[in-house]
Image (cartoon, rainbow, N blue to C red; front, side, top):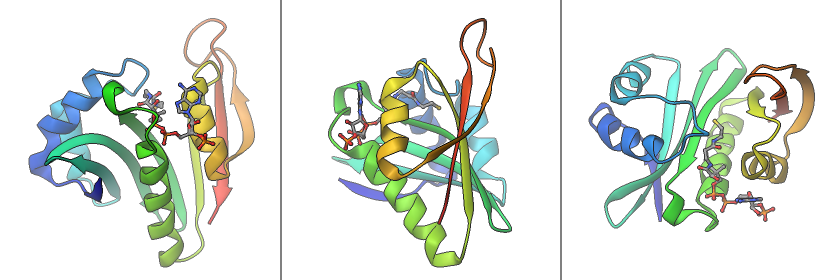
Length: 144
Ligand SMILES: CC(C)(COP(=O)(O)OP(=O)(O)OC[C@H]1O[C@@H](n2cnc3c(N)ncnc32)[C@H](O)[C@@H]1OP(=O)(O)O)[C@@H](O)C(=O)NCCC(=O)NCCS
């Protein structure tokens, strides 16, 4: 498995991965294309057999980073791809200097919470009913 930064031409293939995962942010091809043209946006993707199998999208400005979206193809899940994407994004941020990284995750999204917990994210707060009645958003963060 290789990791690289996504390019504008990857937008349709990122959208294919996203469409397999209702828990992700629901971005379409146009959304990925728009995001990839934002100067502060970065999308890391995993490549296996020349296909995109996962991605992690973040925005970075002046020592602050927000992780916006992450997904791995279901047939490639639980093989360390999500972990590798998070580690790569954090390693790059660390090289660039101190950075506070935050994200939101649904309380009931146990795989995503496990992914972020093993990477070292800590709970910072909660937005009640953010994803609908009874579905709180947890705000997680870490400093790199
Ligand atoms: C969250 C997601 C990206 C994880 O990707 P992945 O490649 O399967 O994760 P990894 O194999 O790298 O596992 C990373 C950690 O998460 C844990 N994990 C992965 N799937 C899990 C599951 N179904 N249940 C519990 N823990 C799980 C692993 O145990 C691992 O922790 P560990 O190393 O301490 O054991 C993937 O499940 C996914 O695409 N989910 C749908 C999209 C989503 O929920 N996005 C987040 C909201 S925007």
